[in-house]
Image (cartoon, rainbow, N blue to C red; front, side, top):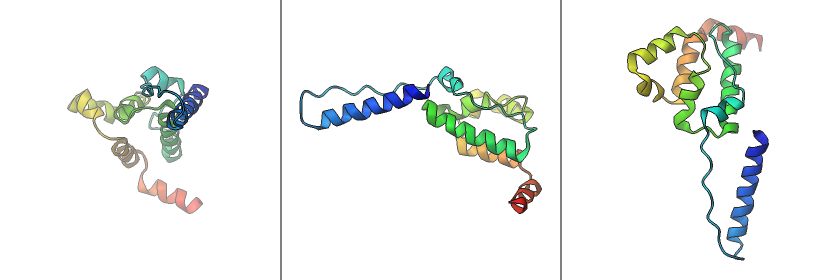
Length: 133
């Protein structure tokens, strides 16, 4: 998957360079392929259960952002795809039931990160980690 993305990006760069060189006819540039849920899952995102603590949440968030980048996940799909890796989180399931799928998934990735951090990173835990560092 990573090799395909790198190859696609280098091909686009070469195509753009040849189009701008003034030599030969210009070829239309194909739009980037949209990341599907299957593409996203091929990048092996971590699951999060809520029992992993501050470190586990930090690792999940970092890995998720890496998967977004590698897979080319559209901003509109980030929350929808990421929340599929939340396992047994009653508060998220209740949020979806209350608002409905469309409204629940309409929040931004930044808002979801804040909600998860508020829920799973008690201030005492964060202060302990800061002292240890």
